[in-house]
Image (cartoon, rainbow, N blue to C red; front, top):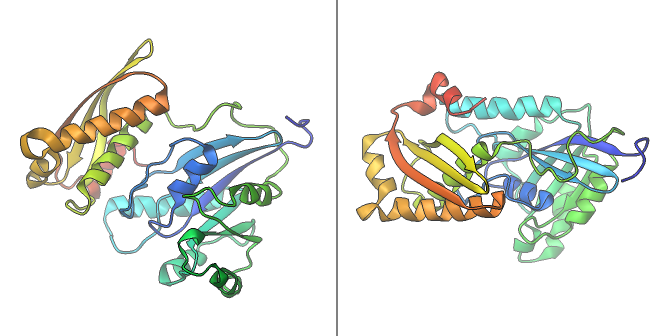
Length: 297
């Protein structure tokens, strides 16, 4: 690492509308799965810190929930509050948009962006544009919407231009010693990450069959050497949803658990024994006490 007098460390908020690729970008930059992904909007519900340490900088990425106005329950109020609090706390903001797409969702977020710290516009999914020649006109148009410190086009999914993004962002980090150890990738506990990985598999396996009234609660997490024993409950909002998650003869829940266990073993670097069941907690998404018990801020 460089000398303490030149090392840079900073917190960076990754914000954008739902399903624009914030978690994919965070995971790519960190080099590990610290934030869950799926094609469903609002997959991310918590502020997730992903840490990347290089020879001269430490980036602490804060992956935030997608800001939206469609739902007005307590869960979505907490998620929107999380976004605004994060914007007030970080050193740099990465505003992620989909290349070629600018609408009401983006305009709503622009109103929240801080004017007193650098905001870097990250145009994601450039690989999905039919004609890449349209990128420059799009960036020129968007640059008039806000005084962005820099604009960087990327493909988080393919890892395109991420080195350039890091190089661009590093110059805005304050000179400061690292906050985390060099090999840390997140400040979240394994218990938290286990719950998130299981929730991801529920979302991925159910598609659009269930609404967002699903959460995961880790009821027991024990470690014996390299073996982790995890007892987890998938929380649903209505009794009718329980059978959907379990599936015929329990096959769907078994597949969800197997997929989650494999990801846990890859992330934790050891064997995982995972027991999963389904519980009904009616109205949990609109009950602040229930949300706090499930780890929502």
